Length: 454
Image 1 (cartoon, rainbow, N blue to C red):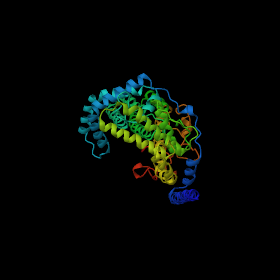
Image 2 (image 1 turned 30 degrees about the vertical axis):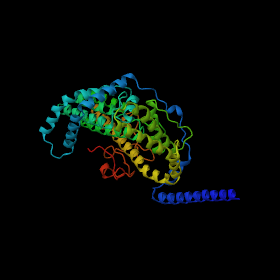
Image 3 (image 1 turned 90 degrees about the vertical axis):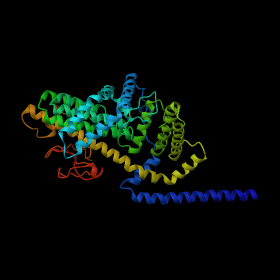
Image 4 (image 1 turned 90 degrees about the horizontal axis):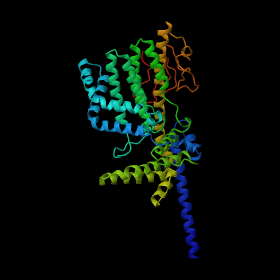
């Protein structure tokens, strides 16, 4: 009798806990969904319930080429030696470009420091000659400086070196060495090539690199009247145009990012399972991959007890967070995280979703600007060779551009507009006829059209 009573109480408690869990979940969902934009609830339901169909072979990646490892290691060594001066020069150059008062003496002082940076620039140039995917995988890699046997350039070193290339390009441009200026602009782009969504950091490298490289190229193109040199430049631009993502771009942005993280980790020999998982579960797998990455590639090389303690703590946090999103559960604490996730999933998704969406928007802005640069170059070359301006974008194809370039913000897949000059309708997806200039400092999703100011 006592046993039967105990069982009844136990079942009642389980039912009560289930009802409380269900009630809290419904309450949280209603609160969160009311704050999501159009389609938010539908996207969330898909993220939680639908299996992501991905061919496992798409995740597999071969080891780094020995030449790439050597080039990346050389770049890292030069960066460690010169980073203080490089950061100082880069910062002064940025301030110079932003200031309204641009004294020549200030610029000349920066030019005088460039020879000191040549070892770093040469190392970046050597790295840029490696196959595209090698560069992309390195750029997408995490950035633990403690690792001694794997080359890890990081976002800061990459971006600062690109700015130094931009400064050198500017110097050559003022000396009317257009060939050299255009060549250095190309190097900036080549070193910023990343597949979209390989990781957030890789995407930022791509955006920063294309932005810096495009600005250097625009200045050189505007001042160059040599058709042969512009033709060579246009060929390089067409070759270096931002690539399509290596996964289906219609997937949820968070899914794309996690798949890219798992694929990048595979390059370093860290395996991740993507079979039969929902978008939510792929979050858990990505955190688990990061835990393995730290455990296998970072921890064994540490000697400082504080560094070891910190890494072990991060590994534990990654594994617990993995459990929160459907990854492996190894202890009671992990089980507690997993149970709580049923309630907190909508909150986490709503917090992360805008960040991933913003990343995609910034990527499309970068792509639009680069396509406008290609049109800008093709337009000038057409005018020099034909003696008149083209009347439509189709006039540039296929002699100058392989095909009319599509506006990445147009839902109908329309080509970029050209009246009064080439432009994209921008993130607001409203054609402002170039009366409003899109400026990301007003917000990633702010009003305005994307165009190169004439």
